[in-house]
Image 1 (cartoon, rainbow, N blue to C red):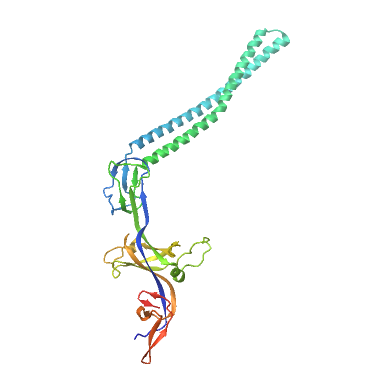
Image 2: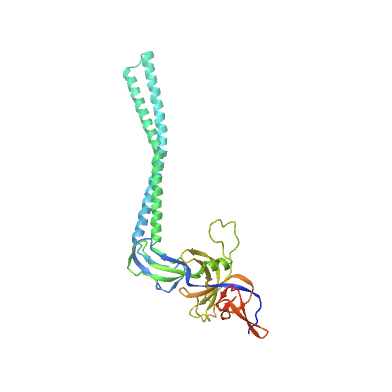
Length: 358
């Protein structure tokens, strides 16, 4: 016989899931070429520090492209400088031509006046003065037109220079892309790159996993989640038809291969998805690396691939009786000892939780 009394019992929802790294990236080269160097520890399971060179592509073609692009930029810069210098010279020349035109016009008008009014000069002198004036005007006009075209020529040259500089930037970027570095301290999950191998842009050759933060995706029955899961209150910032934030709760994680000796703690993070086919709600559990490496777990860390049992705290049942699960019959009855005799009592089963019935 066991004496029981009403108590408040927190509800735990239990689910299962595989441990996965939060961040995982597949690395593909952005340029083509032959591999000329490979990290000495580029093997599955090795941990590569951030910034170390994973592999390098033969850079010679890309170095030549940089030199060619740099020469093109220099050539266009020189062309623009020559155009601007020539514009300055032609502007000075135009002033001289305009002055010559004015002198020629004055001489023509003088000769014409002498011929028409005073009859003291020959017609040939007038014609010669007019021809000189027309030639001077033509030279000045041509120079003015030439000067008017310089801004367009310079603008066009500067556009070509901008394009050439963009080409130089691209050539430099491609040269930098010949060397592929680790974007973070990561564990190699897959590697298919060897010396002298020819690779192409977009070809997946490496997979890196960031084990600094782990996640477990746990599926819960949607009815259980609706009834027991703790959600944060509505937020003005949340104007989407999706679940609000979950209450920040500590969850208990156990490795299913050894439920007694391997226990870790994680935090309830977010709702991942609702599966309409299975009517389940998937939640994400976050575990930082320092917790995954916590001692007291037979020196075995929590790592990717472990299949784990997760106990998620939910709401609290108030004023319930905690009984062994086997003490409640299939018909929802319990034997009660009263004054030395057994009595069958109907009970309302609020929840079955592990080996307990509430």
